[in-house]
Image (cartoon, rainbow, N blue to C red; front, side, top):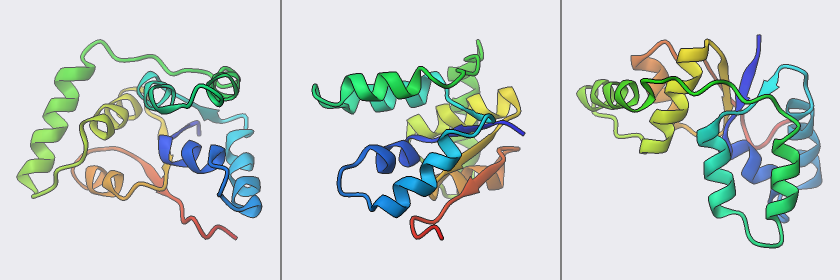
Length: 135
């Protein structure tokens, strides 16, 4: 099954202070033929990329297929947000958008971000929460 690599994974992959062993483990997920990305993840990464790292980030992201952005992304993500609020959860807006892209395209999300575990409890989002202490 295909999966989207969340921004939290990419950030650790590109971060200079991340351990070489963590980067090596993340590279296995990133280089897997099932790995994909989506426009909200690309946006999150590129808006925060430094001038010196932007080209490297863009080049890496270009290697992955981009899943289609659903036409009702904003409205459906808002509905997810309401469901989360009903359960006492307040995930960031960008996480709601990423979750909705995954749900609409029936792909799993690979992440370090705990917010997605909460979203998955109130939606059909499939997520794999990785540990930064990967073995």
